[in-house]
Each structure stands twice: as C-alpha cells, then as structure tokens.
Image 1 (cartoon, rainbow, N blue to C red):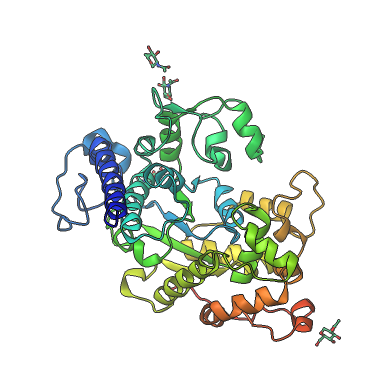
Image 2 (cartoon, rainbow, N blue to C red):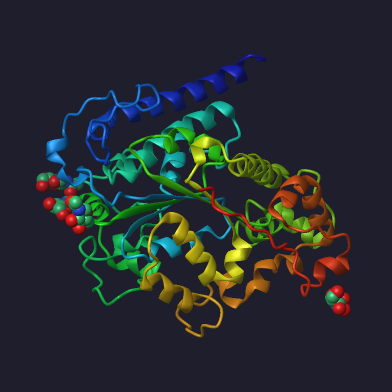
Length: 425
Ligand SMILES: *[C@@H]1O[C@H](CO)[C@@H](O)[C@H](O)[C@H]1NC(C)=O
Ligand SMILES: *[C@@H]1O[C@H](CO)[C@@H](O)[C@H](O)[C@H]1NC(C)=O
Ligand SMILES: *[C@@H]1O[C@H](CO)[C@@H](O)[C@H](O)[C@H]1NC(C)=O
Ligand SMILES: *[C@@H]1O[C@H](CO)[C@@H](O)[C@H](O)[C@H]1NC(C)=O
C-alpha cells in the first residue's frame, strides 16, 4: 500500500512529461520556420542548448517579412497575477493600432498539461509547464499561432477553432480581416459581442493579422517568477520588454474572494463569521507573496539579463494617474502612445460617464480610492494575518501596514506610499 501512491504520482508525472514531449515533437516543424527577425541567423535551433549564432539559416527566403528592418519588433510581456489589474494594463496595449495583443495564451498550456491542478506547486509539474510556456511564448512572439493549436482542446480542424481562450479580449481578432462582423468604425468591440458575432477563428488569418502589426504584446498570469523567463529574455531573436505588474496583496486577496467564489469560499466564511476556518488553504495567499518577493527581488536587483527589459508597475499608481503612468510605460517600451490608447483611457477611467463600459473596470473608473476599497471589504484580522505573511513584500513595494481597525477603515489616509520604480534602462 505504502508505495502504491508514490507509483501513482510517478506515473502521473511521467504522463505529463510524455504529453509535453509529444506536443513538442509534433509541433516542432512550425518552430523551425524563420519567423523572427534576427541579424545573425534565420533558422531556429533550440536557444537553450545551441550555441548562439550557429544555427542553420534555412527557410528565410520564404519569409521575407523577417528581413532585418530598422524598426525592430517589440515583444511586450505583461507579467502579472490574477486580480492584479492586468486586464486594464492589457487594454492599454490592446488599444494601440500597431500592437497585436493576446490575453493569457498560457491558459491552454496549463489546461492541457496539468488539467486537474489549477495552481500546481509540484516542482516537476512546474518545470514542465514553464518549459512549455517559454516555447509557446517564443512562437507567439514570432506570430506562429499554429503552435498554439496543439494545446487547444478540441484540436482545431483546418486551422479554425472557437475555443481560443478570451479571443474577444484581443482587438485584432475581432476586426477585419480576421472577423467580418464589425467595420473599421467599431473601435471598441465588446468582448462578448466579438465571441457571439465573429465565426470560427481562422488561425491563418490571425497569424497574418499578427504579422501585419509592428509589435506583439502578451499578458500572462501563469508564470510566477521573472527568473523563470530568463531563457526567453536572453534569446537574441526576441526583443522582450517585461512589465511586471504588482498590486497590494491585501487587494488581490479581497478581489479574489469576490471573484472566485468557490475557490475562496473558506475565506468568505472567515470574513462572515470572524473565525478562521481550520482547513483554510493559506497557500492561496502565501504563494502570491512568496512569488512576488522573489520575483520583485530579482527584478529590482537589476541583473544584467534584465537590462533595458524591466519595469515594475504598481496597479495603484496606474489607478491614481492612468494617463501619466501609461505615458511612462510607453516611454519605457520605446513606442509612441497613439490616440486610441489615450481615448480609451479617457473613456474608461475616472471622470467618464459613458454607460457602455460600466462595471468592466470599476476599480479604475471610480477613483484612486477605489483601488483601496479592499480596506472596507476585508476584516481586520484577515488584514492583520495577510500583513504577517506578506510583511516583506508589503515593505518592498511600499504598501503601509495598519495597526488598528480605525487605521484600516479610514480611507482618507492612503496606504500606498509614494515610491518611484524607474525602469531598468
Ligand atoms: C520596415 O518596415 C516598415 C513597416 O513594415 C516599412 O514601412 C519600412 O519601409 C521597412 N523599412 C525597410 C528599410 O525595409
Ligand atoms: C477541412 O477542409 C477539408 C478540405 O477543404 C474538408 O474536406 C473538410 O471537411 C474540412 N474539415 C472540417 C472539420 O471542416
Ligand atoms: C483561413 O484564412 C485563409 C487566409 O486568410 C484562407 O486561405 C483559408 O481558406 C481560411 N480557412 C478556412 C477554413 O476558412
Ligand atoms: C481619518 O484620518 C484623518 C487624518 O489623520 C483624521 O483627521 C480623521 O479624523 C480620521 N477619520 C476618522 C473617521 O477617524
């Protein structure tokens, strides 16, 4: 009996590894295509094992769009966690005319490789997942959307699917030529309308739409630490700029309790009864703080491999001055901020009365104080507990702790300290 459960775990791990290997093998062909601009080489080997600049050069002539061009593509990576305001940051990029944006493609990797565990803490699972994630991101930055197909269930036929996760969050996938349901005048297609009115997503036209754009931006919430992306950041074929988005963990907790009602049920019981359930899954909180602490420490210690590629953004700063902060982000990316982005900010943040976008970005819309509305939603002992667990990261990111209920509930005093996080240039 004793060793049988071990055998089961081993078997499970082995099957995950085999699935991943199979997927890699099956999809290695598109990966050989020359899809990324690089002065030194066109053929793609495996950058993790091959010495740099000694890969083959087959296939370039078929892909003239990769020829070196003075305007190099920027590959924006928004590194976030769920409920940290990442949809808002995603929109700031999605609205740009010259950006092809994807909303969390790693969802498909996780659901395929690790179906039953939403947040696996197992080291082996995690390594498989991260390896697959890096491969996928590398392909997507090269506009190879076919690579994603092997992770979509059911597997797309004839390169079409209606199962791309949050397709409607991607402007380019709801517009011509990818979708004919909306005209060029429909600037802000609602995500739900897009899914309803656009027919199957044709991955070939999606790929073409991606290639038409100057830049590619991807938002991910499934990579816990920036160090896990190092191999990608050091890939000479890519030009990645990371935006690490952080939010006060107390705010994240509060928002998750509201949003993920089943998963965070015990936290709601704690809030309602004033007593912490003995079987509460504390890792739902501690994992955020540990990942933040390690990721932010890495980012702020400015390792050479992040030079020119790292900016930390606090959600609360963005909520307070959306326009100014967005300008700083675009400056860091080295891209001009276009009028679409500015218009979107005006329409969706404080001071706007447009009913159409109501509820969507409530936190941002209503005021900076609302970024701190968690203070009225969490009980004091929940806050106190969070502060104990997340002490280091709160300090690191400039979030003040409170020592009394009065201090917690008096929202006229902000808990967000003025702190500048300059991009690492
Ligand atoms: C580089 O690409 C841009 C946009 O695709 C194009 O307008 C420009 O002419 C290209 N420059 C060169 C030198 O090929
Ligand atoms: C895929 O395309 C082929 C050739 O056009 C067609 O015969 C087949 O029915 C298509 N399959 C599906 C599932 O649409
Ligand atoms: C998908 O789009 C491509 C090019 O845009 C087209 O050639 C192809 O026939 C389309 N596929 C389907 C199944 O409609
Ligand atoms: C909130 O804090 C401010 C500033 O310290 C203070 O003047 C005010 O009386 C406090 N409000 C309440 C309700 O305690």
